[in-house]
Each structure stands twice: as C-alpha cells, then as structure tokens.
Length: 166
Image 1 (cartoon, one colour):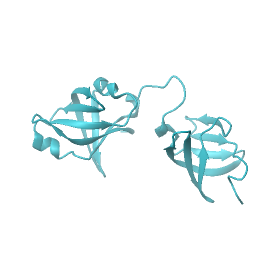
Image 2: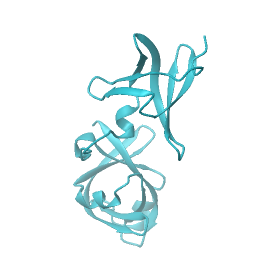
Image 3: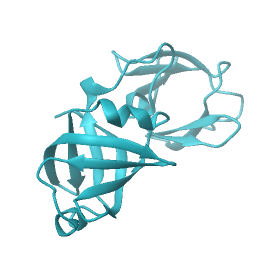
Image 4: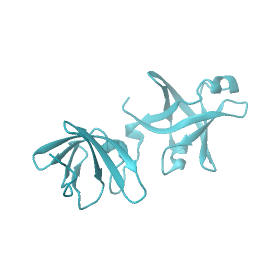
C-alpha cells in the first residue's frame, strides 16, 4: 500500500473502542468519507475498515471494525493513521507536501539533492534539500521555485544569490 499519513491516535475515547485521532490534514471532515485506514507503528501495519468517523472540535473520533473495547483501542495509542494514496482527493492547484518529499531538485543542469522535508515557517514554506554539498534550505517562493513536476518527481529552482556557496 502506497500510504499517506493523515493522523495520529491520541488515546481511546469512551468504552466502545473508539479512537481519538489528531488529524494531520486541513480537512478533518475527509475522515467521514474513508472506507479503510491503516494503523502503523514502526514496521507494524494493520488495516481496518472504517465503521464511522466524526469531528469533535479539532480532533476526529474514529470507530474501526475489530476494535470494540477500550482495552483493544489502548493498544493503538501513538500509532499513525494512514490511507492509500489513491484516497487522497486531488487539489485544484498546487501539491501536497507528501508529493514533494523525495523529489529531485535541480538548478539548471546541476543536481542539488533530494527534497527531504517541508518546513512551515509562517511567512513561506522552506524546502530542505540534502545533497552532496550538505543541506540546503530553499525558500518556497515563486521567484525561486520555477517548476514542479510531480509525476517526474523533479523540481527546478533558481537559487537566490549567496544561498549556494562553493
């Protein structure tokens, strides 16, 4: 399964096996449309059918088939909630962070490295790129990021003066 992280199990909720989940998404309502999720901790992965999901304040209460008691739910505290990539709704414009991570970054014909992380700074995002010259922090600005090809996993940039020292 090509999975995308959408939340983290915080703790059991109630006595019927419901899980309280911290959503890692801008649209927690999307949980109510899910048919299946994977819970993962380290290398352990378990798939479950979704019985129900409801948003409560800034968290999601998730009921999964086969988790029917507080004791069963407690075993999944701290586990990641993931969905198959095909379940992620397409964006009208732009891209998801998970689509950028792993992308090859170039300035002209020069390979700068692999985009390993997206940092949210408030003013603009910053792309962390690791390559042969170490780690670069590239501002996610239209003047810097010239092209993003998600399918080809390639980003073309024009670095600001002084960002890449030889």
